[in-house]
Length: 368
Length: 267
Image (cartoon, rainbow over all chains, first blue to last red; front, side, top):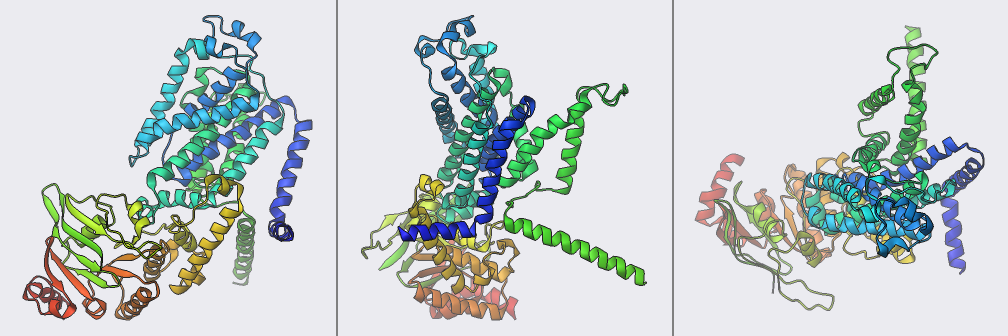
């Protein structure tokens, strides 16, 4: 007993900065949850959900080095699971007015958490079916197969009228508005990913990314490793999808076009393929940034009717900013680094030394 | 007692027969070498043994000793590389294949993958089993790095090491898989005579300290003749000679196919 207390004490001593930081984050969420307006609340919720989904995409694409483009499909599975199982039974006949809901499902209603987890598992189950053939192949086949899968899922959901209500979508999903749901789950996912990456599983992921032949020669089973990463990714994405449905209160197949996947691809490329903290930063920057630039879409942005301020300019500017970032930070904002205390200290030192050097060289210039 | 035996192994790529009727027999505790001119099929032979290629025909028999000291013969031809590594064959690569973006320590830690077994859940929850497994793996890897003279560089990126040390790291990584048979693919390639001498000593020491059987491909004839117990000579996929260094040096076929040319180049 004493021993465990000691090790806990040692642990706290070693990681006190991280613990303090986490507590501050929790307090921050608590304060934000009390005071932000509904627009900001929605944006923050969306950022947290994007963090979950982008992080799980990064697990496969960044850490394991497999190019998968199925995020929208896995999100759809999670979202529809939550939608189907949490809509109040009494409302179902009004929602499914074209064709009644399948009798098998019509009377099942699950608590939100159960439906959320079920969505994660269903998503992972489907990932297993796609992964079994595709992950055995090397190269870009996975990207093509997962992209195709994501479209297939959308088409299936459009056509299974009695289960998903087809193109009409499902409305009146009980919504969540508290920040704790999304941020709480995002925190759990972040911590789980972090611990996983720093375990023998995570090292196996990275070895597959670096060199498949060498990884295999070191005893890493390629298929098993890729599958593990793919399943975890699909599970978390399914959960993210479920939260997405509960945030919007409505799902329909059009939300899950493959362009949704590109949002996440953009986030992980911007944040750095293979960086957890980069993904988190990029999720918030992209989600909040797209909204912050919204004024560019309005014709009377500066009180003048300038011809370029038209709907769409926002995305032009956004794309331009992205290009600038990718030009100067080729590996994304963080590369494969993590935002650790050491990283910050090193950055601070290098910036400081750059300034002192500049000052020194300026003085040298004067003396000449 | 033989540890590794190949029986009439043929490896054919389309119309090219890269390895033709390979019959080797490596005894436990031996240091065997595979030599031959460029393109003779040496690395292909290694790739067949380690499972990268499935032989077109023939058998690869490996007799690892289990914990109880009992050896049992297994046909490993066509098994997956990671399974073969698990049975106790480790290798290094001719054109270094380190995980270049990872640290030196991480490179070696990956090779302990088969020996640390904790579940996925205990990895996420950091259960005692996972923590102990990690600690033991780390201690072992640091010991190996110390042994290979790389301990001061453990946090460097693997790609930032100088060439010679990258070769050392490859050997450390191979040792971390707990091998019984170590395959070295040109460990001294690109090294100067002094480095080659040091490597010769090192290989010899590792062999006794880790109770290894070593099979290596090498072009440095001094090194091969000095430390090998047994030499196989390949030319165009065929085994043209086998025997101890003395026999090989005096074999007219070898002199014709290989050593004669090699001496001209060296002089």
